[in-house]
Length: 86
Image 1 (spheres, helix red, strand yellow):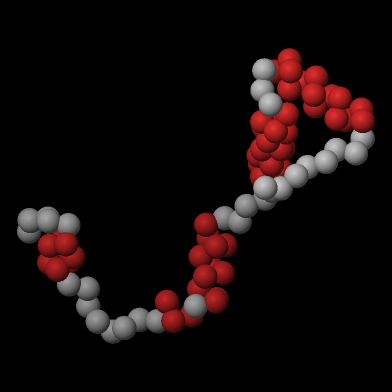
Image 2 (cartoon, one colour; image 1 turned 180 degrees about the vertical axis):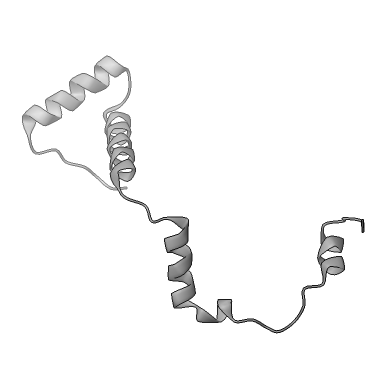
């Protein structure tokens, strides 16, 4: 089990007061605050677009784009989905 030691007395007292007022343990309070901060940072972190992610994947694995020369068998793929022929 990991420990968290707060060296600053004012901060430790603040956590204790907030935990008591909130009716939760100090551990639960710190976890809640840390999770909220992480979510805030995640929201600010720019995410790559789907297109950028695909282009990166194709660069790293160029074989995914190679054509096989084979025709797709529509009846076979329809049978995988239990679709009847129209």
